[in-house]
Length: 283
Ligand SMILES: Nc1ncnc2c1ncn2[C@@H]1O[C@H](COP(=O)(O)OP(=O)(O)OP(=O)(O)O)[C@@H](O)[C@H]1O
Ligand SMILES: [Mg+2]
Image (cartoon, rainbow, N blue to C red):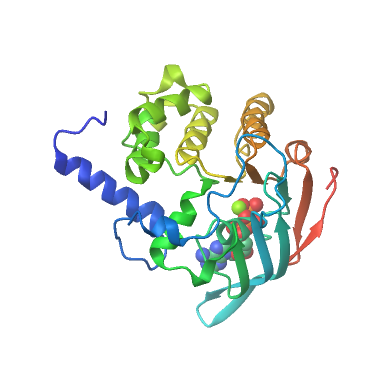
């Protein structure tokens, strides 16, 4: 269990987690009402355990003419300038493009962490900008986001970093302690569970971030440069984890600079001049 001295400390940790992960932009911190789960369409209409396409399934993600600009002072800086993309359930898609081209911006739109300036994002059949905050929080729970910078909480052990979201979500009536242990074993970290991030290597931290992203049994895994800070052999180990997740029927969307990593995908797209163009293994 979490190494806390009182219920108060546990409560504070959970509140902090909720604020950090569920309410990144302009959202009030509210506990998640289980009834909201029913309101969100199609969320569990996925086939984790085999790759057979189902005729009735809407795509995992649809992006329709999405534009995103950032305002810096008076100036509006366009980053994405009309993205159209449909990602099928069970697909493994790599998104490439030069630094600053807008890959993380696109990942934040797909991950329901930001809204487009124009256009529409649909995730598992849900029009993202029509959802209430609670519905949005639930939809985010269907997406395992592995952040470019890991975003682990430094004061907590690997185990606690994974256990905390399991406590917050309590999905499938799971036992958070058991779930965290299973996931850390899955990513090969059984012997490092009680180390804090600063006591782990880059590859090990990346594994903790992956375990944490999986805690809610998401149907979509969205990973932003998950191997960027790793050497080739550790990167290949991490790729094995993603390939296995995809083999289980999960949709994997991976942002990467590395053509060798992208070559594992079913399809490669490139962000170029604010648009998305088909890529190949050599781009
Ligand atoms: N919150 C923000 N406010 C203003 N500008 C931003 C913001 N976030 C990103 N940008 C700008 O948008 C552009 C795209 O950034 P983004 O992080 O999406 O690029 P990226 O393709 O992920 O780059 P990298 O490969 O270096 O991670 C950059 O020019 C960046 O400066
Ligand atoms: Mg980025």
